[in-house]
Amino acid sequence: MFLETQNMTVLQASKANSLTLNKMIRENGLAFTEGVLQGWIIYLNEMLNLKRPMTEEQVELSTQLIFEEFGSLKFTDLSLLFKKIISGKFGGFYESLSIDKLLTFFKEYFDQKLEANAENSKLMHETQRQNEKLL
Image (cartoon, rainbow, N blue to C red):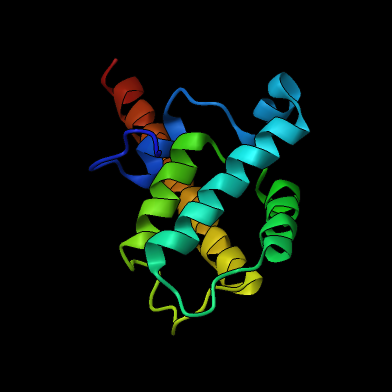
């Protein structure tokens, strides 16, 4: 179901050649992309074996909110994010998954992505400066 992200870092997922949600909407249409993301959320509900999984309406609203706030995420990002959620890297669920919990996971991942990219840019800049000094 998920793209190959085994042992992939947030930075690698961010840099991978993969469609963003926004680009997938432009290329394949909103209905198709909604179906893909809703399928992933439903899969998440099933894999977590929750006593109170998200309802169909919650899944639909979550999808819309994710598109609005996190449309720049790539599918490699989503694969890594969902694997982290399933493996408990974002903490426990206490037998339920809600819209706010899911969006909190997305926000945490998005913040990790921004931080990793900022650190990478800083490192690349420093390396470039060092290389220029050597010339």
